Image (cartoon, rainbow over all chains, first blue to last red; front, side, top):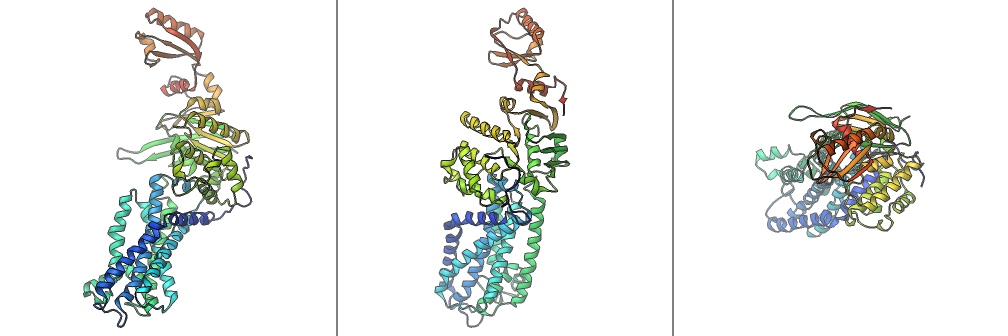
Amino acid sequence: MSATALPSPKTETGVLAGARTLLYKEVLRFWKVSFQTVAAPVLTAMLYLLIFGHVLEGRVKVFGTVGYTSFLIPGLVMMSVLQNAFANSSSSLIQSKITGNLVFLLVTPLSHWAWFVAYVGASVVRGAAVGAGVLLVTVWFAPLHVDNVLWIAFFTIAGAALMGALGLVAGLWAEKFDQIAAFQNFIIMPMTFLSGVFYSVKSLPPVWYEVSHLNPFFYMIDGFRHGFFGTSDVSPWLSLAVVSASLAVICAVCLHLLRIGYKIRH
Amino acid sequence: MPAVSFVNVAKTYPSPRGDLRALDDVTFDIAQGEFFGLLGPNGAGKTTLISILAGLARASGGSVAVLGHDVQAEYAAARRLLGVVPQELVFDPFFTVREALRIQSGYFGVRDNDDWIDELLANLGLADKAQANMRQLSGGMKRRVLVAQALVHRPPVIVLDEPTAGVDVELRQTLWQFIARLNREGHTVLLTTHYLEEAEALCGRIAMLKLGRVVALDRTSALLAGTASTMLSFKTDKPLPPQLADRARVTGRIVQITAHDAREVESILGMLIAAGCDPEDLEIGRADLEDVFLEIMRGETPARVAA
């Protein structure tokens, strides 16, 4: 055994050094418990489809000729993407904070950019994996065609990244599991449920129609749905602008908190 | 260039009853290749000082550098040179021992590191646990993995924060042999411990902290020479004379009193006999660091701070 003081020639340096390993670790973490992190949310989405589809098919009119179940599928896919992206970064961080193993990361040269890229990247992977799973099991229940795959890809990635970054902010802020649960149950859940997953906002009374337009989740789901039907409640370009702006704000907040070590470096 | 330098390090925590001063103007260097001990009672500021060095906390004032790299301004360079064994027995329950080590290595940007990982596993008696999940390991085994994780990127400076707290005798021996060997091979070691005989056996130089200040800093041998180095031990059932009661350490029937020289031993014995104490099983031995430590902490010996 030698006491080499110099890092070996294979050592990566630079602002993103080590980010690949942290991303790999974060993906491996949820993949090792994929029954809970991927299979369970896919089953939940499928139950929503069976129940709401059964009750509402033929009773609710959306986008003219689009059947209710067809309409519901992209909404459920996007809802699952968003909720799981948030769950991934927030639960990983709060677990590491509470069990104390965050120290393994804190003593490393990982920059705040590396933390950000890895945690948000893993959230996007988890969101996309769950979204693909939901699509795979629900697509058989109603005709669904793809109008423009680019809108689908953009809103999946941007939406998951936004929620991953928001989860990271929540994970940094929270000191207990309850606080993450409260964030999830009192903010994320209502905002996703009231964003038009289960209905077209055009069917709402005028006040709630206006309120829905203040909810960034509405644009993520509406834009994503546009990729399937080529039609939506608002222009996909407006959705793109709102989602991009929200993503930029959340990312800036998240990077700032990581840089100052908010609640993790005392 | 020192391996570690602390310059006027201060740390205050805001608290409802005014600021809590955890560290106050701490200044000292640790030379390259040294085996350095940081001692002090709970709450003295040892872990705070180590946390600032490792980047787990930020100093309120002053600066800390590892081999010339400031721990704040050049945190990436400083942390690459540092291997930290944390005090708490923490682990990531999702991974096996080998996965944990590969991942830790990757965080430091060191890839394809399996040769070194195998060597660490072998040296720490973990070779047959490489594929075991972290959850399945005993406390002692988890502690070994913590040491391996700290060394996985081959840091020249190793920091051990009370690494043998709650560890069985066998592991303590294995661990110290291994750390002593790393030190002989050129690694600088900074150790905090409650087992003072360990610090005495291993550390060339010692700093003692009390209430966030350095109260003693010297070579271990000099620290011992400058203080009461003789220890009187005996058993008695009778109360001690008042002039001895204050300075004696009493554990049940066993009484221990330190003395500086033979003349003082004679006078203590005189007082005991005059008071009718009848000391049984009298032994005169060498005081250890714990006694020095207690003496300094009580403030009997003026602080000795030598470079």
